[in-house]
Amino acid sequence: MIPKIQNFLEESAHLYPNEIAVVFGEKRFSFSNINRQSDSLASYFQNIGVKRGDRVVLQLGNAIETVISFWAVLKIGAIVIPVGTELKSNKIEYILNDSGAIVLITKEDIAVQNIELLDNSKLKKIIIPNKSLDLEETLFVDFGRVSNKTEKELVSSRTISVDLAAIIYTSGSTGEPKGVMLTHQNMIAATNSLNSYLRYSKEDKILCALPLSFDYGLYQMIMSISVGATLVLEKESTWPIFLLKRIEKEKATIIPAVPTMIMLLFEQNKKHRFDLRSVRSVTNTGAALTSSNIQMIKNIFPKAQIFSMYGLTECKRCTYLPPEDIDNKPDSVGIAIPNTELWLVDSDDNKISTPNTIGQLVIRGATVMQGYWNKPIKTLEKLKPGRYPSEKVLYTGDYCTIDDDGYLYFIGRMDHMINSRGIKVSPKEVEDYIGNIKEVNAVVVTGVPHADYGEALFAFIVLNSNESITEKEILSHCSSNLENYKVPEYIQIIESIPKTPNGKFNVIVLKQRALKIIEEANNTISI
Image (cartoon, rainbow, N blue to C red; front, side, top):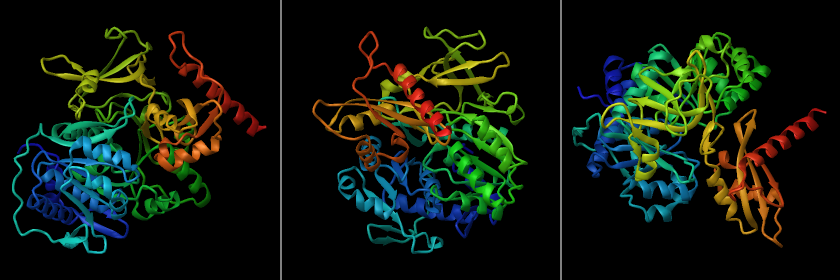
């Protein structure tokens, strides 16, 4: 059998047909049910002309329709592009145009709000799952016209393992989204590696409140399907009190989380004290766990192992910290995941062998992406010749150190990317938006530590002469036009921006100033 991602679903449907694959709200869906519905939707795709290699955008949020659509797209050899429901119109437009997608599966309100830009795209079909109909019938609505499941049999797509399976868009240092290209082979390798140390099994129940549009959430679904486990799927906006109730009710065993979520769960559990002894494992990536976060996890989930991890969309996961090391190396992001190698290089591309020396992290392995869609120059910056002819290794753009025991420590991002609420944010993207406000002359955005978000955005702004606008008004502009995780937590209007000797904005000086401002504010609050 040629290895393809959809084999995970097909094999689990064969081995555990009547077992519960997904719990969504009060409904439960078996493996055979999801397999059958995705077959029906895949056949519908073929009937409307979607072919191997075509791109299909999924913008449905955390819903059972996302799960079914994901597998259906793969079954016909098309390429799935999961995106968040919170995206603003300009981002939706960019992704549709850049990818050349011919099908968009989305919510009715999103389609209505963006009808003009959708009309101007290359889309041939916009599909809105009809939530008023029973999913058992696999009925979909295409702008008000119901298309029932086709009578034609699903035709083999002849997909092979090196075909693209997904394009996952991620922000870059330019502020322009980059489409990370992943093959079936990449995603299978990542799934198998993650399962080998996290040890998901068919007895597990994975509570997922992470967005399926981001790879951390998406792989919870893929991994659970691959081993015959149950995915307890929650909407991204679910209140922490309801998540705790769901964990207790379903007896969830695995909780993938980011620090913000851990903080909220901790505060709610202090008030209500749920029985959470069923949880055997808590995983984290996207933003580093603090010592405080670790203690919170131990308090909420006393029987759980803690897996602190680090990765990039470009290779899924780089490292994990074995649970037994969480106390003696809490600041480390661990060791290479199985079937992966890592090392550091200096500015001259020489491999660093001296422990505790800062260098750029390089990743080698089967999970490394194929490049960025439609961005050959950006691809060349990230993928460079490896050990063997034609092999490529990933230059992450992240500064790290490795200690005497071979454990990795993350220092910072070479392109100043900010990890806010577990999501990578490009300062330039936020700077570009604020810079277009007519009263603004110049702006620099930097990242500062934040107890809940991992990092928060701090914007320093210089106004044009004779112009007047308040920090509150600038914040209002941002809140109305940017995704929540891109809205600055702190804004300060200043007279001028300090510069380096070569005339560039001195980000280091501004970052130090931001840290001092926050420290003084915290001291004032403490007093």
